[in-house]
Image 1 (cartoon, rainbow, N blue to C red):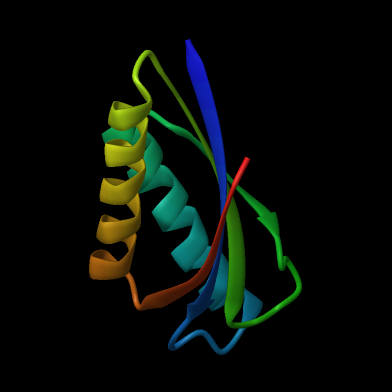
Image 2: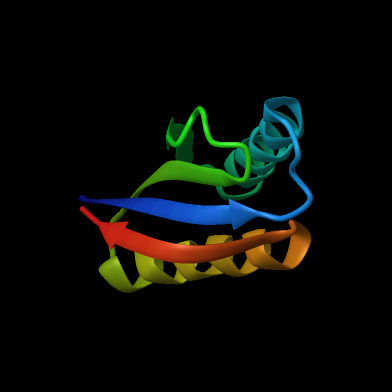
Amino acid sequence: MIVRGYQLTFIIYDSYSLKDKRNVVKSMIKRMHNKYNISISEVGKLDKLNQGMIGIAIVGNDSVFIQKVFDQVVKELEEHYEIDVHDIQNY
């Protein structure tokens, strides 16, 4: 069993209040969790209006599979939401 953790820091465009940010981040979390069955949560930048930070954990038997799932998650986040991922850290 392999467990990989990632931390994504991103900028949210068209977010002018914490309420706007919260709507976007909660939607991202719910959609990715339901579609890919990953553990995902907002972990930082809680008081910033247009910045977000989420943590993602993926468990699997194959590191190649885990990387493919993570790449799909990042690609879908950038395609479906007005965000720009500018930092990714692995753990």
